[in-house]
Image (cartoon, rainbow over all chains, first blue to last red; front, side, top):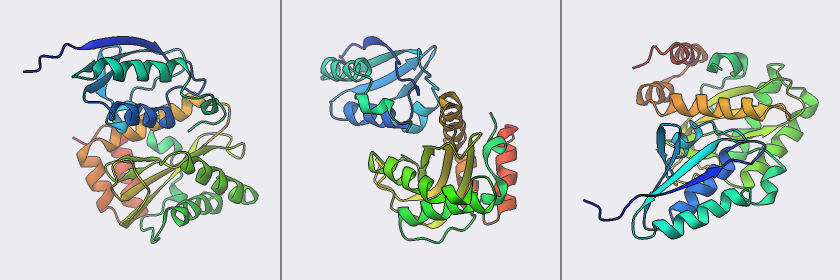
Length: 99
Length: 157
């Protein structure tokens, strides 16, 4: 049984195109760098940050509130970087094109 | 939104024989043009836009599936085609696996919500093993259309 608590952070999708495929792949790539499990929760449903297909089923349009949940030795630092992704709109260039 | 509402039947390619990602995308866009869903004059521009998007990160989403896509003014509504590559194609997917099922989407520039809902729809059905396996085994457009209809009507367990 894991001794690591689940840490949760709330984020809002500000991207005009919503959480489309490119930001989702960024989430996966950031999360997999760290020794922890990261899930994304929308309403009552949580999906793994390592499964792009599951993340695409969230339909997180602009304005959607999500909860990032992480547990493991590096949960804190993983969530710091993921929250920063949301706060910086995944890099400004993402606004230019849907993807 | 249902699969049969945005997949163009005449543009489906049940047996795509190609050896690289660029040719796969080219054949699929040309198929949409041949079906009359996009203007022939826009074909090259759409192919270039999709390839540019792929350069930013592969749209291979795992399980042997890729969803190359772009926004383009040529589309007045969201349209898609499906191609099955029985031999697999290297799509530089994040999971490193070859791609066997391709959904290519072209969306109007001003409808980001439709684009997300189409991605949700495709992903929701493709995580269903029954749908995914039957689709990989399909050999004709009719079989693919039957599967899409069954998926839309939740007839697949």
